[in-house]
Every structure is written in C-alpha cells, then in structure tokens.
Length: 104
Image 1 (cartoon, one colour):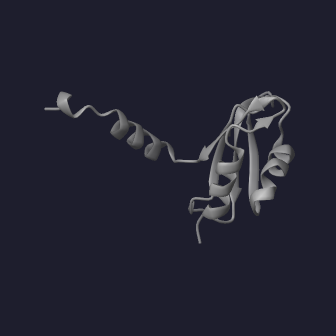
Image 2 (cartoon, helix red, strand yellow; image 1 turned 180 degrees about the vertical axis):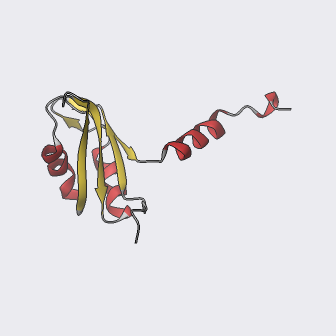
C-alpha cells in the first residue's frame, strides 16, 4: 500500500519559533493516533513557521482541526487545516475565484 493520503494529513502554520516536532506531536496527540509530526525548517535548521501532522484516520484529523484551529500555542493562534496537494489547492483556488461573466 502506497503513502496515499486518506484525509488524515493536516497543515499547520503560524507556528512559534520554539515549536519542534515533539511539541507539535504532543499538542495534537489528544485527538488521535499521530503517525507523524514535522516542523519544516530551512537549510540552517531554523523553523519556517509551518508544519504537518498526520493521523491514522480522517475523523481524528477533522477533530483536531475543529479543536486546534486558532488555539494559542506559545501565545500565537495556530492556523490548522486539512493538507492538500499543491495541484488540488491551485484548482480549488481557481474555481473559487473564477468569474463566469469574464470567460469567453
């Protein structure tokens, strides 16, 4: 079985500079079984302010979004949403901002 997302992956941004993989995992474990938690870092090892958390099931991920979105972590409100592949996100944004009256 490949590493296909079944909806259990979350994108988290506005992370505090002190956040690391362990703190991210710890913050999200109350909502289910976390299979991975990763704070993205630059080539110098400095946090880029966002990361990803993966859960075993989509239901656990949805519960985490509901409970953690805008929750304060080290004084900063978190943005928590379902992770999307880049192509999916671009397609969704294009559909959202499409203006039918401007199309040929």
